[in-house]
Amino acid sequence: MKARHLSIIAKKEFRGLFNERTILLAVLLQLFIAMFSSFLMVGLTSMYDPSSLSKYSRYKYNIAYAGNDSAVLEYLQTSPDFRVYPMDLSTGVAALKERKLSAVIYVPDTSPSADEPVKITLYTLTNDLQSAIVDVKLKDVFLKYEKDLRQIRIDRLGELPIPLQVPKSSGGGDFYEFVYGLLIPLLVFMPAIIASALVIDLITEEYQHETLETLISTPITFSEMVWGKVLACELLVPIQAGAWLLLLMVNGIAIQNAGLILLQVVVTSLILILLGALTALHYRERTAAQFIFSTALVVVILFVLALPSNPLNLLTRLAVGTAGPEQWLVLAATGSVIIILGYLTQKYAERGGKSHHAG
Image (cartoon, rainbow, N blue to C red):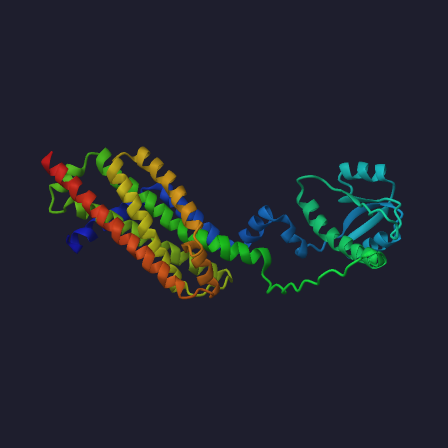
């Protein structure tokens, strides 16, 4: 296998990438996500956890209070988040349906020292982002009232509760989890998935366009053709992933061990690319190969994610600077898989080359 022949094939495929509109659109989409990650981070986080926006809301919400408990009313009126309007329950619910109010709170006439529990009913709009924020802010008010009730009814306790020493959070919250647990692994691994799908197209098009005979008639062998296409797809991964990491850091997201992240992504992506190449060599038809590969990829990803030291988890730990020596064990394991897949790819390519020469 000659390096010059591999470079010829790789250069040819790179030039052909500009004609692949699907690939270019996928790259542009990732570029958009990386460039505007700070803006998208807020919007996407609010989609899966609307309550995360509550700490950033400074709006005073109009709520109705229906009840006679002065303690709850006092907590609501002293809260900087609400404008409280005492009114009867039916009027408040009617105003809520017309979206004149954000919530209605009903507190029954139950004495704080009574034997029965105090049941507070909260009316909000369903499937509403504002309601999620109001729920979080009202929760703080209700927790203060619950603490007062516990003090009033403390003489009923037969045993003292065991105090829990919950460690304080180091901060970050949902945005921290979203950026380091989802956004960074998604961006740096997407080029690997795109490249693995691309290598299937590059190999199967040789079969479908019936250009293999012409290619093999040149000094380039069938194996060199396959490995040249694999090389082109593999080179695409660090270029994209490196650009995404750079754009994320420009957006103010601190990323440690960027070099090690790229190394892990390049090694892992080669596994996916070799799997794609094997699938294409076996099925030789784009639609069937892409379907089988996509299905197998989902199964492989689910299996890998079940492992404690999987590449996605390792990327997150590398980005925050908490990865330990296990990163080298993962790298060694992926390297072993690459050797096996590389051997199978070479054997498949040699067999395919012999069959075409015989034909």
